[in-house]
Length: 576
Ligand SMILES: *Cc1c(COP(=O)(O)O)cnc(C)c1O
Image 1 (cartoon, helix red, strand yellow):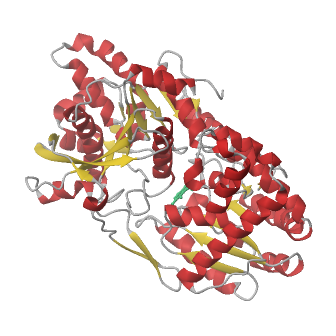
Image 2: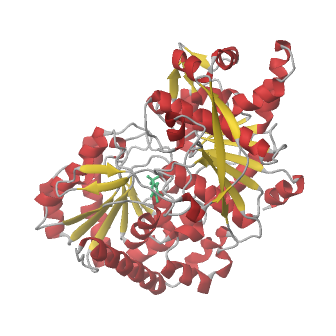
Image 3: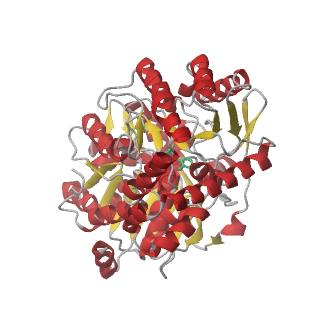
C-alpha cells in the first residue's frame, strides 16, 4: 500500500470522471458494469484514504424502471428520485457553451464514506437551472438517453463542465484526471484550453504533452461499434467552430467524425484495458498507442454477503483492511463454507419468494445469470436445446435458474433476449424452474451473486471486456461456468475455481461448440459433483475465494491505478 502513502504525500487529489457511478441502490444513476466499477474504485479509495474526487451527471430521471409483462415484454418508466434526500446542493455555477448558448451548470455533492477518515466527494452536475431553456434543463435527466445531439451535449457538460466545476470548487491543482471510458474525454480539451490560454499555436505541442502527463484513460469497449463517436458537423454545431478546429488540429477526428476514444488516447500517458485479454484486443484496435492492462476488481466488503462476511471476520479478520488475506480462506473448514452458503442461498430464495411468490427449492442446484440484457451476453445460450436440458435435469439432478437484467430501452435485440427467456421458462415449466426478476440493481445483484450455486456467463468472445459479476460470486464462494473471455481468462483454473465453456481459449466464439460444451460440463462434471460429491464442490467454492476473491478486488485494482497516477513517465506494467 506504499503507493497510497505516496499519493497522500503529494497532497494532490485525483479526479475521476465517469458518466455513471453506482453509489447506492436508491440513487439510480448507473446502468451496469461501468458504473459499478466506478463506484467500487471510489469505495476502495475511501477505505484507503486516497484523495480522490469524482465527477458525474445527476441523471435526475435515472436509468428507468423496468416492467416485464407475463411474456417478458419490457416497458420502461422514468426512475424519479429526489437528490435532496441523498446529496448536498452546492452554490457555485459554471457555464458550458452549447450550440452558442451559455448553459448554466450547478453541482450536488455526495460524500462516500469508507474505512478511513477521508470521505470521497462525488460531484453530480445538474443543468436544471431556471435560466436554461427547457432542452438544456433536460441535459442531465437521462443516462444514455436521447439522440447523438443530446449525448454530445451531455459529454460536453461532463468533460468541459466537470473541469470548470472542479476549478470553481477550489480544485486548482490535481495529480491526475482519470477518464473512465471515452464519455468524459472532453475533459482533456478543457485542460488543453487552460494550458493554451494566452499562448500562440506554436505552443500546442508542449501544452498537449503537459495535459498528457496528467491524464489516464481506461477503455472498456472491445468492439469498434461500441466506441462513442460524433459526426463533425454535429460537433461544430454543438461545441462551436473554434473548439472543433482545436480538436481537428490535435488529430482527434478521423474521416469526418470525432471519436471520443481517440481523443482520450491522444491526451493520456497511461491507457489501459480492463483485463489482460481486453488489453490485447485494444492494442489491435489502437495499434499506435501503448495499452496496458489493469484487470477490474470488485469492492470486497460491498459485495460479500452477510453470512460470508461473518465467516471471514471469524477466520481472517484482516480481510477487511487488506483483501489479500482472503487467500487464507483456504484454511476455513469446508463445512463452514457450506453453511455460510446455505444461509446466503436461503436469503436469496426468501427474496425471490417475497418478490414473485415463487418458492424455489433450497436443495436444488441453482444457476444464476444476472447482467444487462445485451445481445452479446447471450443470456439464452443455456436454452439452445431445451430437450437436452430437460434430459439433464431428469437424469443427473434437478435444476433451477435465476435471471435478472434490464435491456436498454432502444435495444430491440436485448429485449428479444428477455422474451426468449420467458418463452423457454414457459416451455420448461414442468422440468426446470426459471425465474426472471425485474429491476436488476446493486442490491439484487449482490443477493443473486451470493445465493446461487453456480454463476453462468456466456458472452460472445471477444466482447466481454472484463465482466465483474463473476468476481462478486467468487467473493461469496460461488464458482463460475463461463466462456473464457474478459477476467475469466485470468480467473479460470479448470475444475479448481470453476469451469470453461468451450475448449479453445484464443478463438472467437463458435456457438454450436460452446453450447455443446456448456451442456457437457453441466451434465458430466458440475452437476454430478454438486449432487454426489458435495465435499469436492465445496473445495471448488473455497478455491474460488482463496484464488480469485483475494485478487479480483477493487483494492488491488486501485493500487495498480495509483501507480499510473504517480508515475506518468513509466506506465505501470504490473500485468504485462
Ligand atoms: C456487477 C453488476 C453489473 C456488472 O456485471 P457484469 O458481469 O460485468 O455484467 C451490472 N449491473 C449490476 C446491477 C451489477 O451489480
